[in-house]
Length: 62
Image 1 (spheres, rainbow, N blue to C red):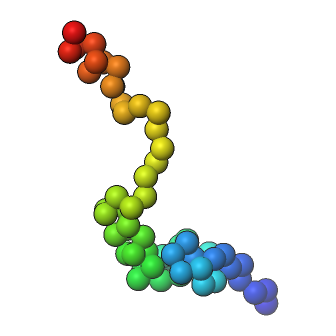
Image 2: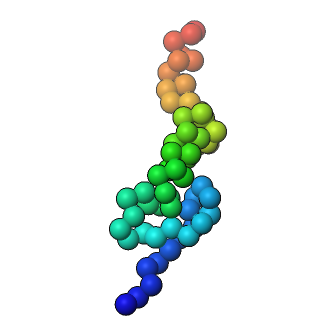
């Protein structure tokens, strides 16, 4: 029997299995909820040059 492939959990860095893991890529429900809370608290940000439709808003002001 082969050893299941593991990857580091994005939250706690402990090994997490990929197969038969309902919380993948996290090692547990707890780590999944910690990550969700970080997104909800806006601790993660996706960089963008402009906000969507910002050029349309500027055109309407003049």
